[in-house]
Image (cartoon, rainbow, N blue to C red):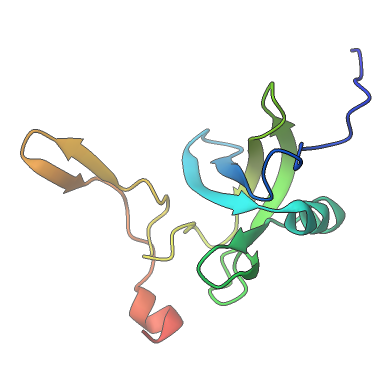
Length: 129
């Protein structure tokens, strides 16, 4: 397979790039967050997903509070190298801080939003909020 000279995401377009976490076994999209060059480098070095929290303005090591870490099995970049796809093994069963397996647990219906996801833990018990 041909290799290209590029080594990773193109952070020259934006300091923060969207990063999608997808369950390596089921293919389910678990979450979307952002990565900067530092969080991407740490993810590559450690094999664990690290994002950049826009609200806290710092690195967010997925699972540092909840224990629900993401082990990265593969990293893909889109054609423009400005979107990152992480294939992950979700440890603990929940990717969402609201306790759901996936952050995409609400479906839009003609009657409004319907919760269709499975809640794995109670966030008040885990985060004390």
